[in-house]
Length: 312
Image 1 (cartoon, helix red, strand yellow):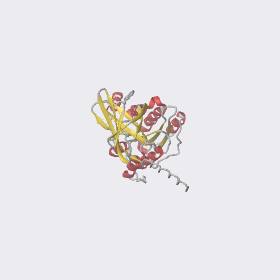
Image 2: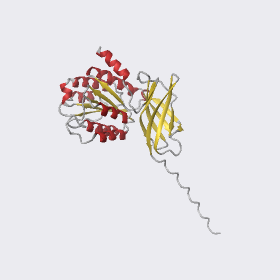
Image 3: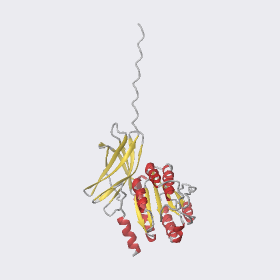
Image 4: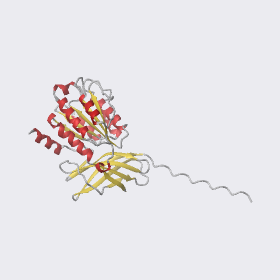
């Protein structure tokens, strides 16, 4: 019964409000970067009506600020083997030990890291009274398993600080793709966070890294966790302990089935502008929209002055 519930949960997980959900499926622009040469790179994910990520798609189209933008190249993440940087942020407050959730969370997170590609890097950030960032990014699965195994539940829940710090750490990893996978069974508790709710959301939104947020049990601050997923173009997963392996597996599947698009910007587009990406799936056009913040295009160099002819 629990296994069936876990599978049903994964199939019915809602897309974040950042994605444009439509009948027949949906498309989300989960990450983008301005390349500074008149192009941008966007990472998108496409889902069918049952919220399963779709592989093998082609023919993506784009507009920027309402103008047609050429998709110069498109490639599947799996085929291109584009490196991924993952921050695994885990609530290690005392409640995780009291409920027995810590053991399940460790096992599911370890299984998740084992599914990472050889070129991917990951880092474990536990949080309780504070946020511990001492674990290094690594490609070593055994080292990641050891970091996870060392997690010990105790203390309160500095959830707001965990979101802000995770966003910063993920954004500075230097990889081409990023993600934060955050698990919590509660809400900001104990008055230990230096960040407010709004500051945490602003920090997460400003970095441009998608958060895959797992709300464990019925005592979570669901509104806040859903907002974190929404403002980062990620996803929110409600879960019980027995669901954790299936939820981490679903996140892994999403990350393996994304697409990287290089898009040429229309002439003169700068500042705030909407990016819309579309693709046709089984006769249905799916579209995702996100807001860009683009640098001004480089100024054209001034023509060189012609030398003054000398007097005859």
